[in-house]
Length: 477
Image (cartoon, rainbow, N blue to C red):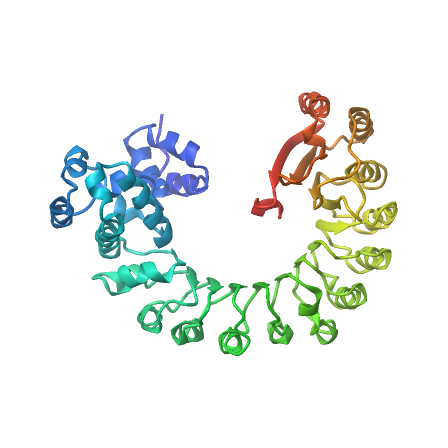
């Protein structure tokens, strides 16, 4: 059998980089597949015993002097230089994993466990900075770790970090650390920042020199009204995605300069944080495709005006959270001004699900709908009934439970829903997802008789996929 060219095989296997199980199987096929697959598999550190085995001899000698003799002596020589394959590095994850590894060693190592963690991390980071040719993604969220592990100063760090494209960091890292990073990293595309107590001047300078920054996420927990503007004003106008999460008031008007914005995510804790929306409602973003407003929402009349101006190109709308009213007028606005929607998350007040028909009739491309359930929203059983009646073209239904109690769904109601689905011509199998949490007592998955119905229609091919997940699953949140 003729072999695929190496470049072609590499291109194919790259598609498996997120499928660890399949990629591991590819390593076992033959020598060529192994050489290619292992580089992709080790895009991030997979085994910490193995990465310690990759340490140069002088690093191993340092670790032996502080009591790691037994560990070092049991490690087999690595087949590959795995450290050189690393493209994704989380300093915080390395810290945690090394701590877990040391807890499994003899008690003598535990006497100075934090010092030992830092020593092992220092040697690993020195190796990575020196041997990893081009790191793509870097995460460091705890300032105390970077104080002990100043990896940006290690030999080889400039070459290792020069092509960095993704950075996730804490705003409270020292300015000197960010200044050093600024000397090398000029092509960051994705930046995620956790605002914590203080915003380093070095971080603002790092942002200001970026040439290709397109995706930014800012999460603010501390009340830094006076210093946050110094950071956000440095963001370039070329942004296409902005994710803003805050427990404090932040003026939204700075967002209006991002005229190329394609995705906007706002996550706030109280309605007062939307007071600038009275002006923001008139902003126009010609390329906006995704709008997600979590937790709480601005007043419906303000949101309606915003959608009238920006709804034409929207493909995804997420409007949800405790406290949002989602009146019929908002639903009708979506139906009228958002004809290209593919995904929608919204709540319907009790017994007000008939507006779903107008949305389904006018949004012909709608594939996925997430319906908020419980409390002052319609129940799960009402949502199922309405979808069966009004929204027969979708291929994914997500039932999102915000409250602990609601009217339960009975097996005969599920039977009715799925029988209705089988009557569609042509038949489109449906993905059904239940998003819940530990306080929810009556979602359909809590009852064995309901699950029997689910299993039946999975076997019949009516249900393509069924999943129960929680609020922490980012795919459905």
